[in-house]
Image (spheres, rainbow, N blue to C red):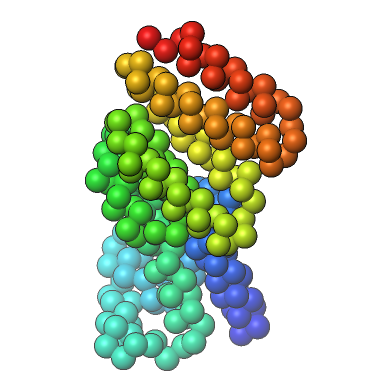
Length: 221
């Protein structure tokens, strides 16, 4: 049983490491699933303040209080999972802030998400897109530069960075109301496609880059 629990803890911690460095395979749904798994495990050890039905687990509140006072629970495996759960909870809260900020076009909420997870470069590409559609090119350039730097420092595939940047820009394209917005969005998307062509040699990217530049001349009001 002890061996099984150690494997469970190790698996959870490996997942958290993957989430912290921003692995592209981990979606918010994946994160929620792992967080739910951790909650169930902690409930089984009387270390989650709520029971599955939402009622208060009084034994757990005592145990959690003791851990807060001493810095440990007395069980290294429980401490490992609790530390991992704290990371997952922070990610969950940051994801919610970013999602709300994107839906509402609220830069303040997106900035709060970035403060919680400054190393998540995907947050920064989304924030950059909102800045660009809002006419704030200074913030756009700053957020894109930081996102690109994070990708490089973590030896991630730069193709991800450019694809995510295009997706973020496409996500705000529906809000274009002026010629300047149209030109800014389409030009930046074209540049990312051109970079993808340079990275991959895929001619489809070059074609898309040229098409977007043509649209700047013909489609922007």
